[in-house]
Length: 92
Image (cartoon, rainbow, N blue to C red; front, side):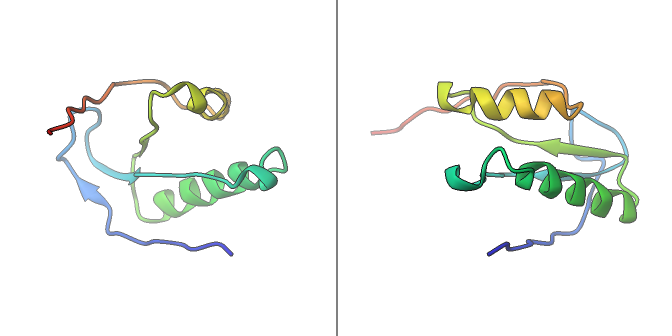
């Protein structure tokens, strides 16, 4: 099952781009569906949707963990660039 979450495009509140943009907060394809073009289709669909909204940029969040290395290679292969790192602190 595929679920499409729709949020309004954001405007001029990001340090990494100007103008209207769309952000993908998370994209994970189940292991058994990987390497079959599912992720590519999802990303292409998101890009097309962003263009239809008039967005100039698509931002994508992806963790910096070792298990995300293949995902990062996938995004780089689709023309995305690494632009930033996030920080986290666990509060106990």
